[in-house]
Length: 148
Image (cartoon, rainbow, N blue to C red):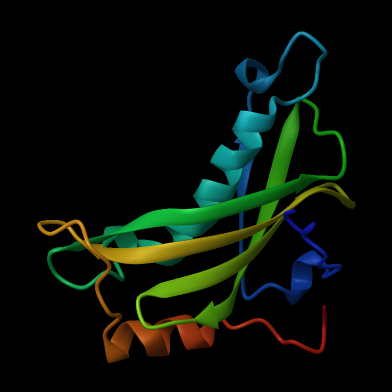
């Protein structure tokens, strides 16, 4: 059984906050934003972290893959508007990083997510250990464990 995402953090508790525009094309016949689009909004938050200034935190010859993505859909998201995306680091392993994210529209949390990303060697397609500079960068985005 997969446990529910349990964070009750406010958007301001996340060390990295960005936003995305909700497009009419994101809606389904029910008039709310499709669940797959919420995963795309979460990706926007991860990209802000993993590719600052168009570069990459990955070691040379490496990239990032998602090993786990768990999303709790806790509210309805509708067009038009913006969605704010909070992203923070919960864990730094040898080759993987745990992230916690939240999607907020207005004052309402619409989704919470936990993601595990893994740095992998683009040639061998195997996990690659994080370098010290990358580990330090992720440490700056660490979530306060007393807030959750």
